[in-house]
Image (tube, rainbow over all chains, first blue to last red; front, side):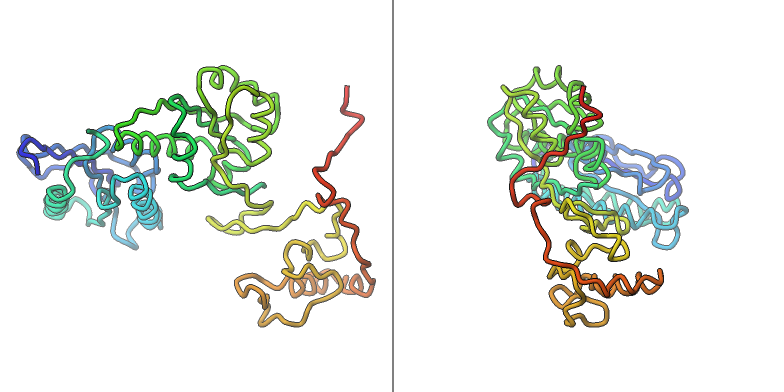
Length: 134
Length: 222
């Protein structure tokens, strides 16, 4: 990884999975977290995810409620299917489907969010910067 | 509705690569309903193409526009300004829409971004099923509104082939036997006697066997 690589991670999250902002503290010089709050994770349209990469994201994470706990019954399942489809499209684009991931979290579980961010940042060490931003 | 499916990104990328300024033109009717060519699909495809070309260090200027219908001149005209500003049009309409756009703007290359698949219905969310072959001589009244021409793999008009198993077609077990559906439906309607009538060999002249068809409504011609 380049020494000057400061990963940008965009996180789309269901407002019910995470009521406030993403709070786990990370040194600002190490990575940049952008968060997009949605009424339900199923609101992540394909184009929202792709535009996050156009806007410079190196990785995108979608946070959903656990299965069976979606306020809108199957919103998290829909989000999961959309993410799977987009991963295939990212492979076809040449960015790599590994730059997009989905995790289910219990409401406001800061520890889990911290782990997800650390894992995503660690994955980016191998993946490197968004190749469309060269 | 006319059901279509977007071509692969690889195929589209190859088609548009030589045009630095591209208009992606969506259609807000059938292909929007089947998630192949409405506003959302235009936006997603534009974003995917920009990323794919940027990754290769190339710039592609993309304009996005969706008109209500690409198969009617009245709506096509709304795209005139955008078409004039670009080197090519990638149409996400059905084949009819692509050709109508090309007819209207004869100096601009018009490329198809969608494979037009069939006339069908939304059977359930995400599943589209072919139900009409546009044969030009509808026989649905006889067959309880189940089309044996489209939905029977053998296009039989005088009863089932006898090969179905548990209501499924022997050619493709994923589809229902049309004749099973016809008989069940006619039984419910008390119209099973419809099947006593012999259906003679069809003339396919009403279909497109003799080339593209035209439909003229004199009362609408001014």
